[in-house]
Length: 362
Image 1 (cartoon, one colour):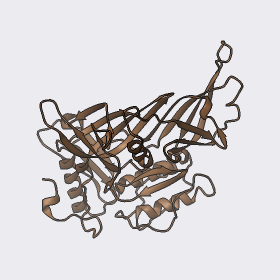
Image 2 (spheres, helix red, strand yellow):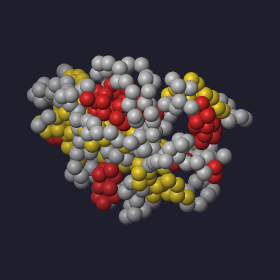
Image 3 (cartoon, rainbow, N blue to C red):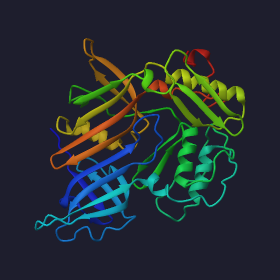
Image 4 (tube, rainbow, N blue to C red):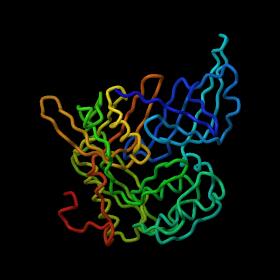
C-alpha cells in the first residue's frame, strides 16, 4: 500500500531531506465558517543553520512523488528552537496561502459600483499590482450579485471574502495563483470514500452530525438597499446565522431569508472524515492529491454503514481539510456538508434562479 513521500521547497532550496514534520490546511471547517485562507507549518533540522536563509514572503511549495505541487504557501514566520544537545537544533516555518497573504493589504479607496461581484474583485485585486500572488484575469465574469457600496473599506482579503460569500462563491489556490469559482454549484471530484481500496479511498474514522440544535436556523440577512430581514423555523432552539447580501428588493431578500432558514434547519447529514495514506492504492491517492487544491467546494461520495443499518452512500460537499505528516505516515481530515445547503436560489435570475416551487425546500 501507499506511503506519501512529501517534498518541501522554499524558493529554489529543497528542505525535503531535513523536514521532520509537516501539516497544512485548506478551505474551512464548516459551511458556517468564513474562509480565511489555508496555513502550513513544518519543522526542519537546523543543526548547521539550514533555515537561516528563509525570509518572510518566500514561496513554499509542497508536493510528493505521486503528483505535482499540491499546495503553495507564503512564509510569514520562522522560529528557531536552539537546543542544548549537539545537533538537536530545529526551526519551524509557518506559511499562509494566497488569500491569507493578501489579507493584510488595505484597500486604497472605495471600489465603487460594479455590475457584479467578480468584476469588483478583479478591480480590488488590481490595487495589488505588481505584488505577488498572481490573480485572475480582470475581465468581467457574469455573477448574480449587483454590487453596491455595501461594505466598509477594509483589507483586500476581507473584502474579497465578503464578496465571495454574497455569491456563494469560493476560491482555492492553484500553484501560487488564486482561482475564483463564482457559482455555488458543487463540482464533482474524482475521489470517493468507501471500504474497498481498489475502488475508493478507505477511511478509518467518520463522525456523523445532524444539525438540529447544533447548527443555526435563525437567519438574518442584511443589505444597504433593504436593511435586515429575518426568518426562523419554529419549534427549534434558535441559533443565529448572519450574512451580508446585495439585494435591493425587500420581497426578494425576504424570500431568500425564508429559504435559508428552511434549508439550514433540514436534518441533513454533516460529516468529519478521517483517513491515512497507509491503506490506499497509488491510483486512489493520486486521484485525491491531484484534486486537493480544488476539492474545497467540490463533491465526494461516502459509503458507510450506520450502527444497526445497511450500507448507505451519500454525496457531500467538501468544505475544507487538514493534513498532518511525519516520516512514514500522512493523516487527513475532511470537513463535509450536505449538498442541500448549496441548493440556494436567487429570484429573477436567468442563470441562478430556481423559481419552480417544488425546488424551494418546503
